[in-house]
Length: 141
Length: 101
Image (cartoon, rainbow over all chains, first blue to last red; front, side):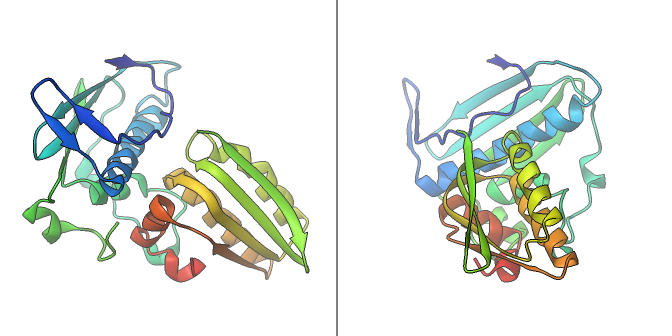
């Protein structure tokens, strides 16, 4: 699927089905995935395409019995994810929170700079053991 | 989903009511209202999020901007009614402690 870089309507995915796999998604699961995808999509649209009027963003979704994976590809500006500082939450930041939110909302968040730049978000229906170790907040979503 | 917002004054407190989605697309719609509240030095503001279904980092930033600018005028902003996804985001960003949502 190719979509133009506009801010997505935040319509929660309540279920996803393929011919061989059905995945029932809770409201919390859906809300977290919507948050993660929205933050990454907006990050691409606002920063990756900051110097151009239009561009393409490709979104692919893979549904399995125990997880949902969403891959987002773009040809916008790349960056070094490891250089993105954690927001200083005690100082009430007004920016730099998007990737922090995305990381917290999925079990795995991977980014490969391109072109094309590839984001991959994976969320497991029962949570991932590794997730608990790197959750950025003790407050569960 | 669009954002609908309105203000009304009760007992000297301005209630800013947000309904729908406050995100990167809709947050700019709110900025003129924030500017007006700050310029008019409305120093007691309550942001009512009971009707807010979704928020993202841009939406949070707009509320934080209102909070900081009002505070710099000597005022106070409180946030009420957050639920579901917006409440989870405020907790994740540890802003529930500041706003007492």
